[in-house]
Image 1: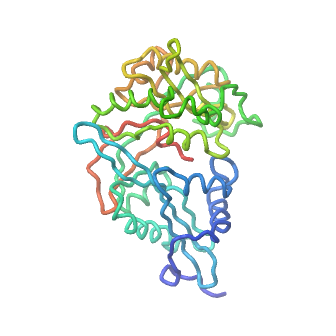
Image 2 (image 1 turned 90 degrees about the vertical axis):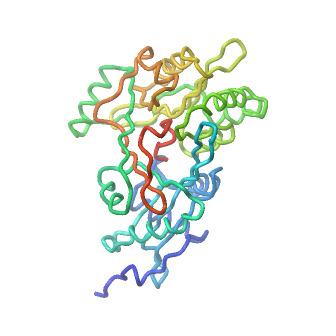
Image 3 (image 1 turned 30 degrees about the horizontal axis):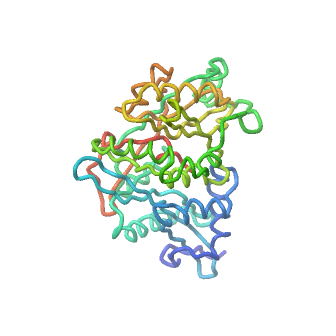
Length: 357
């Protein structure tokens, strides 16, 4: 039996269009079907080619006979800082990565990651992601810093069903899962965000986002600058991700918007509330959106992240949301060249900023 190629015997190069079928097969073999259940060329193009922050840099490891032994992609992202010296922080998020089972344990993941870090160093200031417990030690060895755990707030809608499902999950017991998607009747983000009277330059959403951005400029934390175009790409155009919209109005004025998606979590139906935007200081609209997410999503519970100091965080208790114990995502980060001075307190997230998609 011939020896498998070592990393030095592989070619490491950017992926090309003809590689796409093999890349999708490799990702599926390593990571299953992803958040939509099936890895398609359409989803890949939306995520990695049509991203408004730029196309994803990547590398593949190829054998001499043309087989793909590994793939690594970084999703481009942008954060904004507030204050008088507010600026854009170009970032990447390590996302889709896979090593073929025949080549595992040969250092290919590390080589792909470190080479890609060198490649993006010229135009990228920050690298961040939310590794799980299995992958976090490997990231630490490559220079990532663990910044802390991003908490999740939960509102139980059907307490009995939620309690049974939560106990099964915490005990790691298998539980019968219903088939099919949850019965959510909220309007789709695809339709709502495609309406030019809403998302156009003079539309209600654009006005809401402009007012929000002006108020947030005083907040020095890193945050995503939300525009109608970004929201349309992130939630309206995502193939196979069933995002829905909730809105609140005062008369004809749009005072708040929330976006989330119904999904199965084992035996439970969860409404993952990804984004919530209200006019500055409008806690009443935040309460209304949080309550409506529970009332109208058709799910057993709502899960979200409520960033400290926001109207949504201030409204959490009034709307029935509590921090869930033993949950959350570990945030890890570095600069392309090494350590980062950031802490968890330097960020203002929505769950949609960190959701794996």
